[in-house]
Structures are given as C-alpha cells and as structure tokens.
Image (cartoon, rainbow over all chains, first blue to last red; front, side, top):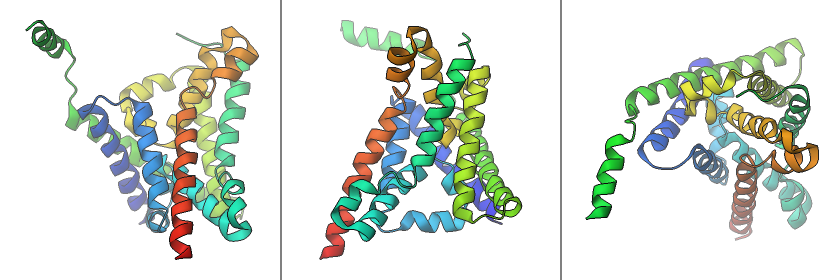
Length: 116
Length: 146
C-alpha cells in the first residue's frame, strides 16, 4: 500500500511542477527553489513528517524533502544546543546528500569527458 | 504598434507545449522515482538490517550516484528532456545539475573551472534552502517561546 502512496505523492508533486513550468516563464531552477522553500515551510508545524509517514520514499525523493530535512535539522539543533544549534544543526541531515553530490560529481568529472 | 506586432510574431513562433501530456509524463516518471525510492529503502533496511533513517541516507546516496553516472555517460540528458519535471523535481535533478556543470566547465581547469562552477545551478537550491530553513526555524522557535 505504501508503494501506491509513494507513487501518488511523488507523481502529484512532479505534475504540479510540470504545470507551473509550462504555464509560466519560470525556469527549472526557479521551480526547484520554490519546492525547496515549500518543503522547508511545511516542516514548521511538522506537516511534512505526516507526509513522510504516509508516503514513505515518495515524500523523501522529491526536492521538497531537502528543505524539510534542513528545517528539521535546525529545529533539532535548537532543541539540543539552544540558539547556536540553529546554525550547527541545519546541515545535520542533508550533509549526506550534498557531500555525495559534490564528491561523485568531482571524481566522475575527472574520469569522463563532456559529450555534446 | 511595433511592440504588439513583435509580440504577436513571437507568440506565433513559440513552440506550443502540450500541458496535459507533459503533466501526465511527469506524473508517471515522478511516481516511478517515488516507488524506486521506497523500494531501495525497504531493500537496504531488510538486507543490511539498518534502521529506516539510515536506509533513507543510503537510498539518497544511491540515487545521486546513479544520476551522476548516467549524466557523465551521456544519456541522462535525453531522459530529462523527455520527462522534464518528473526527473528535475526528485533529488536526481539536483545531482544532474551539479554533474553537468562540473562536466561543462572542466576544460577551464580543476580549480577555476570545476571548483568554482560546480554549484552554479544547484547552489541556488542550497542557498534558498538554508535561508528559508533558518528563517522558518527561527519563527518556530519564537512561536514556541510564546
């Protein structure tokens, strides 16, 4: 059942993004930024956690989960370490994604030649 | 008068996008990405006997590695052109943007090319993500204090 929820949730988010992309003059860069901000916003009152419980991987794969994890880390940092935790904790959960992207891109760009 | 004429001319020659068809394609590919994500989480949690949280990290790293590899081999661009937001909105789009920037600027050298330009497109995601997450956490903190 969670697979159906994952399909529906991720699919609907991508379809909304595609409609925005076609109907307005925004570029894909704007769309991803909008979705990250929406994901960060939805985490203020733990709404996104309910989506994660309902859709599992379907809610963790879209870029909205990136914003959700950033806010989640900052709030967790505040609960643990006070005001400075807002700065310490922001990258706690997302560092895996950012590090993996940078490291793989760096080494693969050494190995492979660009193809046009 | 000249301006309206020009606008009409531009509108006439702008390729018409089939909004409904594109949305269906994005819905299906995005949904498949969601299923792959959930499948990988279950796979890692079951075979490596780790918690769901650690399996989520493994899943994200796997998807990022696959999209980086396919971008550098060269056929991921065609998939993105076909599926558009179906592959841009998932984390694969983030990895794809970083990888293609790194490949594109490689001939300008390691430091000033790859190093300086790798996050050219995906840097926006990180900057706006951090700024909005920090602001929203501050709001949550202030709300919690009252």
